[in-house]
Figure 1 (cartoon, rainbow, N blue to C red):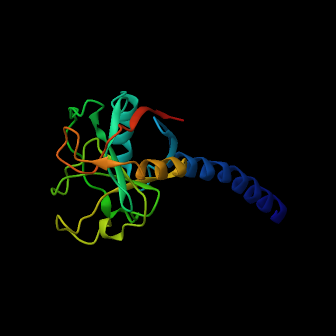
Figure 2: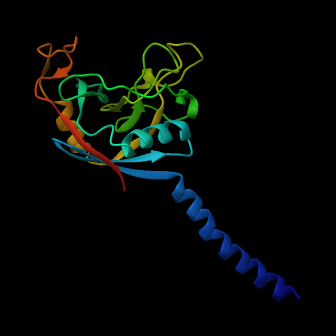
Length: 194
């Protein structure tokens, strides 16, 4: 009798392991971002940032990001894109999403987060990749300043490309009212789910 119970437990555990592995794998999704300076592969965390990942994937799969630029580059801080086309026209977006900055993920070097205005729940299509650890952007409380910026994934390949982008020359000699705009456009050619 004990042998039968032991056998059934062993078989049951063996059957459960693949299900657990499958569940863990489905919590992550890889995205390939082709830029004019090279390719970046991102791993997005659906378990910790489900709303944000769904939003980003929706923009990516619709082709929204094709032909957009990294319009804000600050070496020693982050590179931001996903809002303007190569002619510096702001692209129309869908309504803002809920800010998931309180998901426990931190704005560490190589993570991707949603850009937003001073309003907590104002993120739409724009995102940024941290080029250094930025703890000041993490969730610290419920206020507009303390709520933070929602991390929803990380760079798993192509951090060298991110580093090339962060070092491009920037200035105010573009139609955008900022001195952090690359003087030579850094184009996002395509974003696809792997």
